[in-house]
Length: 182
Image 1 (cartoon, rainbow, N blue to C red):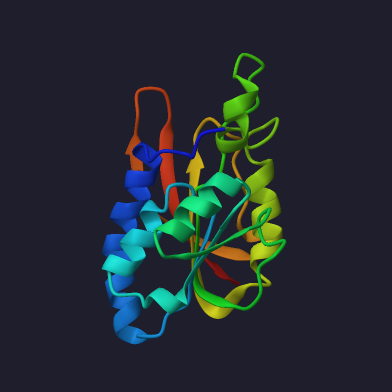
Image 2 (cartoon, one colour; image 1 turned 30 degrees about the vertical axis):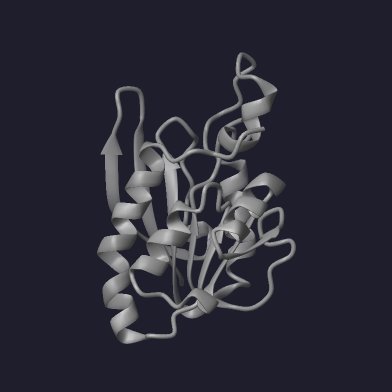
């Protein structure tokens, strides 16, 4: 399986980070940042370029090639299925999850990076169940969802939500949510 290359969703997340992180860093210069599913490392580089200290940038991926790639870029990246091997609490957690509903026509080689389960939201739901244990009380999650997946009721999972950026593509609408613990 090749490393997940940046696409529209990645660029949307980078744009949102550029808009949101500077004011968060102003409030807390020692922000601890975690990316679940680091892929190519584009968001790790964005976080670093925005001023988050490299020693405060953590990441993981289920794909060992991505882990190696991000480590070669100089970032702390470990092999983990979501929070399985993560320790500590973070001010910012970001996740650009696999969010497409299962499609039998999709090659098995790309499903890990793109398919979020039968309805497309199962991995997001699993992430949200676990994330509360790793987010500081006043921390923020930045999460991408797709209009192709079944909607998630954030409130019922214990999160307050704010839609902070969307992009309409020819076949779907991608949105980034800022989530906090209720």
